[in-house]
Image 1: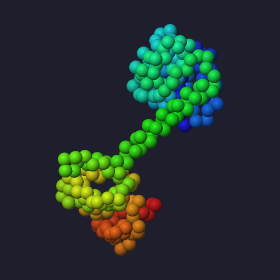
Image 2 (image 1 turned 90 degrees about the vertical axis):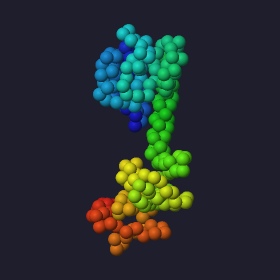
Image 3 (image 1 turned 45 degrees about the vertical axis):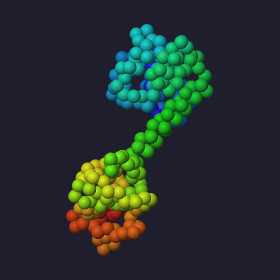
Image 4 (image 1 turned 90 degrees about the horizontal axis):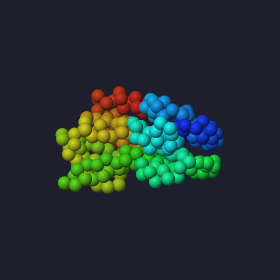
Amino acid sequence: MMNAIALDDEPIALDIIANFCERIDTLKLEKTFTSPDEALKYLHRFPIDLLFLDIQMPSTTGLAFSEKIKTNPMIIFTTAHSEYAVEGFEIKAIDYLLKPFSFERFAQAVEKAHQFKSLMINKVTDEKKYLSFRVDYSMVNINIDTIEYIECFADYVKLFFTDRKNLLVRITMKELINKLPSNEFIRVHRSYIIHLDHIISIRNKKILLKNIEIPIGQSYLESTSQLFKDK
């Protein structure tokens, strides 16, 4: 679901946008504005996904208005003036609707916004799945899903993988823990961190992985037991 607002000095234009938004299940029009100042105040209080923005208004232009926005919503420009199209796309608008526009053309623009939002979400998700480490004067990218467990040696850690050779990295355990997603990794010993997805079983204060048993440290027994009790 995307949430949106619309700014246009013509109430009739806003009524059309509101009507079209109601016909799209994945789009919620939160509010409409004829005043740029009121719209700007709203945007600074309530971040939204999508902004329908008229380009030519009595007190300002949509292009000037877009430069005042502190957040970064997707923008679909709406205007009766085709000569502004190039400028609109120069500031990376999602689309440009020339009035009067049909529902089909409106829905096409909204679909572009959906696709762009999905692309950004997937990009962020993919970035979170990788960590970079400096090894032997070069950077190595690691998919965290392939890390089976991690063993600490003073200012170094050794990463053990499911699909590649072990890797020794100069980093402290504390620094590494701050980089790892807490919902996927658990520290079970002062020297070991384990990826939860690779745990086969837990028995007798030991965690069985594919090729090794990891001891659970005394000070980590309660937190480890509670985690698997909750699951």
